[in-house]
Image (cartoon, rainbow, N blue to C red):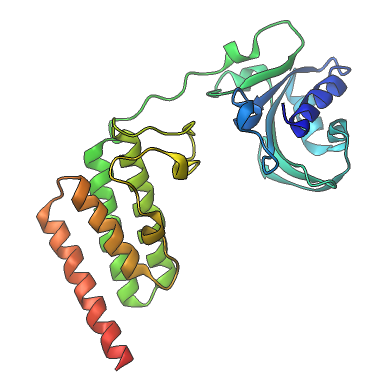
Length: 262
């Protein structure tokens, strides 16, 4: 186990002296996949306490984080249930505090019990991971990506380059990643249920995924749109009407760009 990760056990031992604390749960690479933890990892964890009064106390006061063996140099409230914090030695933390009743409403995919007072299994309290909804289909993600491209290109024509970048290089690419996930031939490396971009570079993808062309940056929205469209049309049966509409806008942008340079 990475030395920084063992500091979560030190924190748990420190908190065990407070009878109001019920459990410490590791998440992400501090969860069941501890082999992923490296020098660049932060520590994500849940603290389970007995009452809302205790919860508020632990949210307002960060002195207990000294149990990690370091000084809190920076912290802020990033969620009604938790904070992010940076220790003076560079260890970054993200945590949330819950009562057992609150924990019962949360999916605990990949969580690990670092320490528990032993009165119950905290993981047994967690809710099931939400089922995939009917909207998470190949048809939806494909057409959402296509329409993201269309809207984004029109933003580009209007001169809204940042908005265009988000539609083309973020929203549409997110849908591409969803399509990759839904492809049974895809082999993902420790897929993250909450963040599709994680470790996508190490995935085994049928036909490849030219992310360097799909996400080339703020000034290259037209190139990005063409790359995303090329991938969509090569890998899926796309509607010719929306594809033609997208290509028409790319032609207009090409003409506009040539006129601007003339």
